[in-house]
Image 1: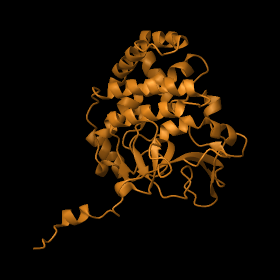
Image 2 (image 1 turned 60 degrees about the vertical axis):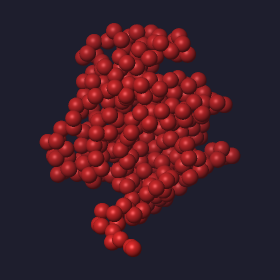
Image 3 (image 1 turned 180 degrees about the horizontal axis):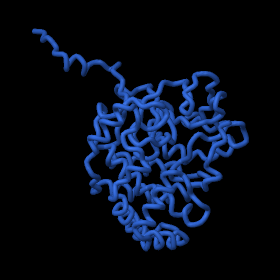
Length: 313
């Protein structure tokens, strides 16, 4: 005998009901990212740095198992939804727990024999840093206002601690909590620009392009053939390193003259947007010889303020 499906069951069968927001699963995210970084390190011109970042991301995974951020502020969420703005803009919504995460990361790195000796003074400096100085450095890292002194060496570790905190907060949310933001080119959770976009495979996400936040790891859907920086649909093109395969390409825009990378899981199911972006520095070097400026930087590859600002005129 056939049974009449109820409304909820009917919806569950609708595979065209695309997912607007993909919220992070922190432990799984960091585990997959670390594995991808190790995989991409072999034969890579920056292989040693990728291996270091892989160890840092493993420390993030360990910290993500125990971190406990405060429950999201309901009043702030309501305000954001009413005004179509990100829920918790990163620079002004830092949970103090990030300092504890930083200490956990420092402990993990100190105990890792593979960490370069040259990094040890940076670890010691961060450990000795007072609360106010730590918070000030954290804000500079989030805002990309880095100087060429100790900020650059410390920035990946500080950013890693902040990522654990922001990712845990995003993990507590539901898709229905997330507003439709304007512009749609910044993370609807923390207001950060995407580090890259990713073409997903599997389930209702198959074939869909998502922008990936380098801060809280939230992903939000954006149609293909649309600039992820200015949202233009004109003059969007794709460039890649010759004979390198097309897992990662640079999506360029003739309108705003910027580019952002696209990682394609249809070409490689293990592609991970932040890791693959970091591992394709050669593509960035080639793009630096063109008229296109990088739209946003990789948070785990810090640059000074003067180097990190794209000229999109």
